[in-house]
Structure formats: structure tokens, C-alpha cells
Image (cartoon, rainbow, N blue to C red; front, side):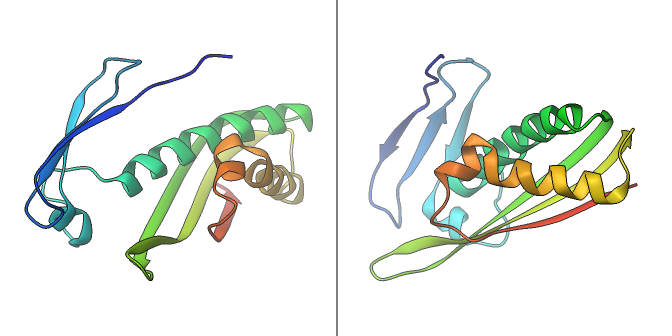
Length: 144
């Protein structure tokens, strides 16, 4: 299996510095990061580790869920997956305080209970969920 790479160039202190995160493997972009904007409610055009984790988690979860729906005999027509990753204080510094996964789906061939079972199994088995076992992950899953 492949290895994917990102790199960050950082200049300055935590409080006044800033950096650029480059998605090296794909080459799709370089994004600004700064701690003041990371800790603010308004991201102000910058990304953060939490947003990048949310992107990784929502996409990984969607892929895993589509596979498990198929294994359960269903056909996913659409999956809308959102991951909300929260940052909070810790000693020292900060920590991820929770991840809320929300999925709304259109699925043929599974009833609501079968879908929720697949959704829960995907939460437990997607590689990003496994990597984040030290963070509380909740799931809100429903068919539309």
C-alpha cells in the first residue's frame, strides 16, 4: 500500500508565527496555518490540523461505509459525511477533545437498522478511526 506525504514549513514563534502545509503526494495545494487562527472561532482563510484531520476522517469513513453497505447487501446512492473535530486545553498545551461524525445517506437494499449497523461498523473499522482511538468519536447516522 502507498505512503502519502504532507509537509509544513513554519516560521516564528507559536503566537506570532505562521506556516504553510503542502499536500505533497497529490500536489493539490499549499495552505496557510497559524496558531492564533487555529484557536479562533473564525479560521480566517487558514486551515488547521483539526480541519485536516476532519477531512481525512470524513473521507476515510465514507469509503469504509460504502464498502460495508455493499457487504451487507445494499447499494449506496449517496453519502454525506461530516466530521467535526474539537480542540481543547490540556496540560501541557492542547488536545483533541472529540470528533462528531454525522452521516446522511440514500441507500438501496438496507433498512434503517441495517444501515445503522453498517455505519457503526464503519466508525470502528475505518483506518483513521483506528488511528484516533485516544479521542472520543460519536456517530449520528440516518437514512434520508
